[in-house]
Image 1 (cartoon, rainbow, N blue to C red):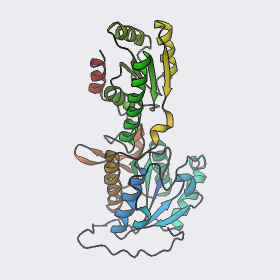
Image 2 (spheres, rainbow, N blue to C red; image 1 turned 60 degrees about the horizontal axis):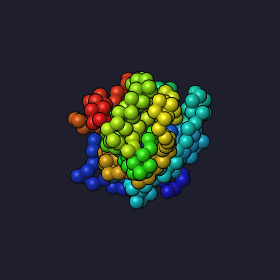
Image 3 (cartoon, rainbow, N blue to C red; image 1 turned 120 degrees about the horizontal axis):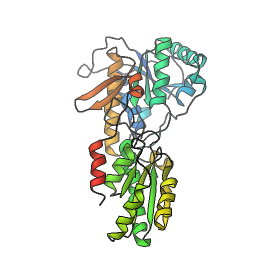
Length: 345
């Protein structure tokens, strides 16, 4: 990586791969912001290599918006993103910035981008990151494209977010191991997975892990009902039970465990998986999703799009206004929720 704003771009664009560039984009920046998610590196790689192939000079911003207003920018080429598609975390680093929440902080960041001659910014992150990008564009006219990078899968406008598939697999692996222990000791495990405002991870893990019950923020069912479920499981001869709780469910895993012990007298253990779900090498689905969305983000800016998130749906790439990604609600699959309850007998 070089660290000056005038490095020439030596890449010649092959005629067979060159795409129309009506927006006249010559230089783009990319950053990762908020919580890290497996697949962010794959997205960075896709953004940098797509831009480079199109003759666009690519700039990496270190430490998200926090690094942007401090001027932590570097020129990046195709070789700078080699061998990162399989790595968790983000090579650009990430941070949350209080300064960026102020008009003064965003103004400093906008000036840095102007000084570097940046024609557009690609933000990889969740709703908080998209807020930051949205206000940068609204206040300073710098085109912004969002790429959904968050394990919670809670952004409206895309079927899945980067990191979600890996987080589910990581949590499921832990559930499988805890089930072995629970069965051996005839013990109940209440397992808390990530999901402050959404139960997508919890629901997928509950179905794939054969859980007896699942608690998600979208459904405010009383915790007392789990007592009868556990009693019924014991009566049917089950030696252990798995209960999945999304962290955003009121009372959390500990509240559910306390209710079970008080109502049944059975030994109950709580396991909070926490940040382990954010780490690790991304699974293939996250690598593919990140690669396709990274490419789409660059093409969107070349086409003159701005203020939108690139997502994936049944029809292909979806473009959703950034503000809609947090203003509109993305519900969990109610069919999957029914399936979880049906199969828990």
